[in-house]
Length: 159
Image 1: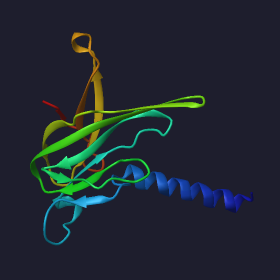
Image 2: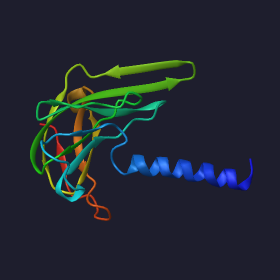
Image 3: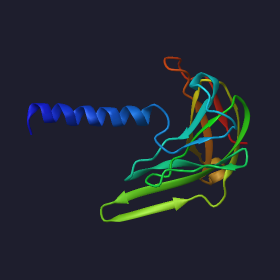
Image 4: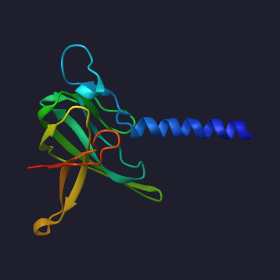
């Protein structure tokens, strides 16, 4: 591979990573009526995809009762919504790869998660585990990724 081909391949990978990191690599669901609004007037909620070999992923099934369309290849979801109070219905998916063997685990029931969205913010839904009372328990959390260079400020937890 020549130097220019390597540079071109590197730029392609860099652009792909930038698109994923920017928010919505999954199909974007617009959860408000009317014309699309500028990014500083809406909030974006996304579930980051897990590694294909190992990891836990939050799965956005619904926001305010509206079904979320998700990516076919990684199951992640992304929604654009108006600022204010919202209720997310979140499931959990785990995958582990051990040599030739794969194990997968889906949650049986979704967990409801209340959140307060601010205009212009990017929110990422993740799964956290705890061992309360000896049982493995998972809970979705919403992390406020802020605006561009603003550091994360708030975390919402499932109730």
